Image (tube, rainbow, N blue to C red; front, side, top):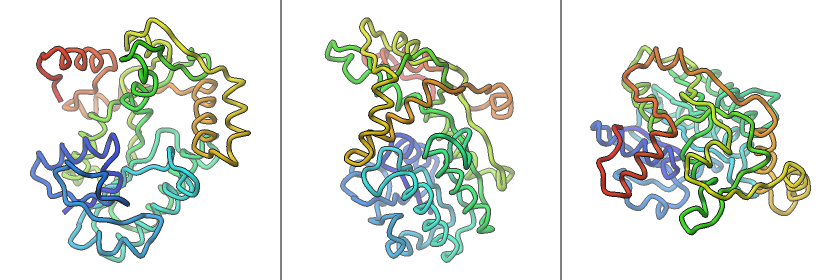
Length: 295
């Protein structure tokens, strides 16, 4: 049995689909089982921020996958609470239950001094994991294409503009959740990936403006850097999620977010490593009734 924390998110749902199709039994840990309706998995109520709820979720599990994050969490549900302390709670429960393998979804360039709180909290989670002695695999993906495509294209379907945060001219590395899920599955079944920490960039570095163009945008609504700075500082007391996301958008618009996937692609050639342009084309073909892209 595999316990999946974060199984109702974008990556989590892809993981459930892939793992169950491969014959794995999957249990999804969720604060609200209603969020998991339709998933082909066992659902168990629990909260990584409340360690008292985790022992029952671990029952019979030999592998734990932590795909959760607090980037979009509200008050007291941000990265420090979920990714740092929540993962520490999950790891203690896993250790107590004798779990043999823990797969942690971290983030590319995680570090203690990173300007994004998510990256700092993921780094802390990595340190918690290394200290437990549990067999582990740490995967560090770059920005998820699917997440950012939905943010940018939020109003395109109704004729609205694409949303670009900042100037939108800073290249960012994007990876598809399809490929991250494929690598998680390999980490679960391949003992050679135990004890490894693997950076997982995607094949393309694109600016947000380029991504908007690929999505078919003819109009763009841009939120200037000045507005992002004001939101990042001023919104924190009343809307911490907005402040966190504005601050992250500012970092993504002003720092080096590129990565080279050449070595990763060569190491795992059986994974498709989808390019954003191909994913967008496949989405349009599915909408028109054409066959799906190879997964």
